[in-house]
Length: 273
Image (cartoon, rainbow, N blue to C red; front, side):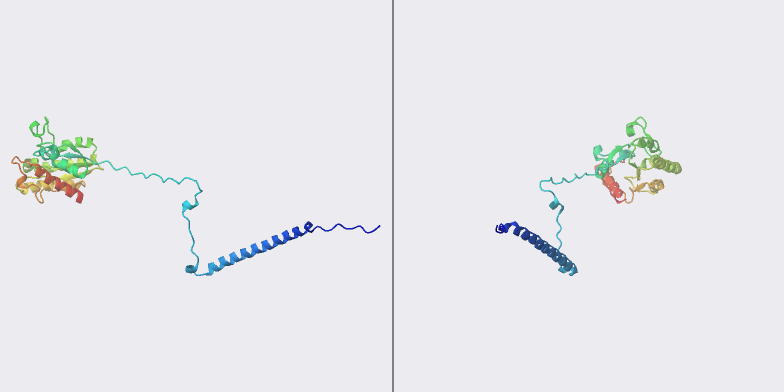
C-alpha cells in the first residue's frame, strides 16, 4: 500500500491566533510607552518655572452637578427682629403736661418722643415740683402729688427711660428752706435709680420765662448734683436760656414755639450724649 496522504494544512487553523497575540503584545508596549511619556511630561512640567507651567483649570461647583439634578436653593435670609421702641415716662410740671401748647401733640415731651422714636407716657402734673403739690385747678386731679410721690407711678410702668423735668414751681420753697428741697431732689433721683437700676434717667433742669437770677441758678445746681449722683444725664435749660421772651404767653407758660425750643434742646443733648 502507498503512504497515507496528510490532509492539507488549513491556513486559518493557527495563523490568526498568532497574529492576535502579537497585536496584544504590541498594544501593551504602546500603552506602556504612552504612560512613560505622560509621566515624563508631568515630571518635566513640574521642573519648569511656575510662570511657564500650563494653568490649572478649576471648575465651578455647578459643573460637577449630575445632569438633570435640581439646582440647590439658597437658604432664605432671616432679617433680625428690630428692638421695640423705648418706653419713656415723663415726670414734670405743667410744661411737661402741655401747658401753653395748642394740643398735646405740640407739647415738648411729645415732640421729643416723636423725634427720637419713643413711646411716651406723660405723667406731668401742673403746679407740682419736688416738694410742691397742687389741686384740681393745677393738674386736673383732686390731689396733685410731688415728684417724690410720683416715682412709684413711674416705676410701675417699667420704663426704659425716665425723664424728670422742671422744678421751677419749687422756687418759693427753695428760697425758704433750700435744704428741704435739695433733700427731696436727691430722694427723687435716688428712688428712681434704686427701683429702676437698668433704666436711663434724664434730668431736664428748671426753666423760666423771666430773668435767670441766683435763686434759679442755685436750684439748677441742686438738680444737676442729684442727677449726677445717680448717673443720670443732666440737660440744662438755662445755659443759654431755652425760653425766648417771644415764646412767653404772659402766664408763665410758653406757646408752641417755646415747646419746640425745649424739645430741640432735649433731643440735641440726648443725641450728643
